[in-house]
Amino acid sequence: MANIDVKAVRKNYGAVPILKGIDLSIRSGEFVVLVGPSGCGKSTLLRLIAGLEDTSQGEILIDGKTVNDLPPKDRDIAMVFQSYALYPHMSVRDNMSYALKLRKKTSDFIAKAVNHAGAKLGLDALQERKPRQLSGGQRQRVAMGRAIVRDPKAFLFDEPLSNLDARLREQMRFEIKKLHRDLNATSVYVTHDQIEAMTMADRIVAMQGGMIQQVGAPLELYDDPANMFVAGFIGSPAMNFLNAEAVPAAGADGQVLKVGDTPLATLPGRALPPSVIVGIRPERVVLSPAGEVPARVDLIEPTGLGTVAHLQIGGQDLKLFTTDRPQISVGETVRVLIALGDLRLFDPGSGARIRVG
Image (cartoon, rainbow, N blue to C red; front, side, top):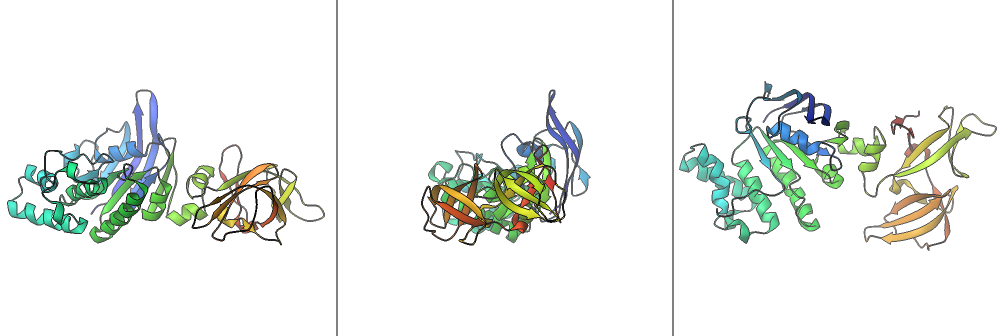
């Protein structure tokens, strides 16, 4: 396996900048997920690493070697696409072995590689079938098997689960992660699905607007987001954002965060700008008769696993998530506990994190 280094990479299509200076180091054997909304540049970055696009500026290195001028076939990487890209007239076995035949590998080598990959992916009984005789999940396994037999330096995945239903996506997430563990392969995985990113990644690269917003372990981005984009994109249900005012605390040192006319929390000994965005995860909003914050219930969504309650506080929406089944009704006024340590503050203009304490 190999390290992948991306240094000051830019990509323009004509006068339109798509990637605006990307610096990223991926360690050998690491599973890195590029995540972000459509148009953020994550697939473009993957294609630059693969050699399917040319950089406008910057350098890409694989295993310490600059590969900007190398064609895809010489970069020793394997790519798994969203569309599977299988040859419809070939059997599973022939699809998996095709690249090895082009490389003039011996029949014994090919048979051993295909059988090994087929066993890992549960394809032993499907080797003679054509793609039209396979389910979506089975086709994706074949596409992965085709990549595995090449024994590349790195695997690149371009939204490989987008065409699968929810149950298959869950199953394939497990299989891809298990495969990565077994192969100890350097893997770069592109998705717009933050659940895939959270459950699969060693590190997440959160992207927006052609730039990297934050890089870190999944729970690092979840608990300690660098800005509003990361805070809002990572997590389901999504983080609450409330427009708040910071006013001096009466008769005490510190500032009170107010949402409309409702006091939310008091921050001791800290000078904040007069207006801030307050972020809080829905599971950190706690229903309690002892709560100091009143809220009106607007909507209740039972999910089986838990309950999402949509509340109104100071004229703004606030989601609450609990694994309990609270006995509350639409229109009722409830009280909630919000711990000071669970709040994340952001600048209303830039969206940058305001750190306190």
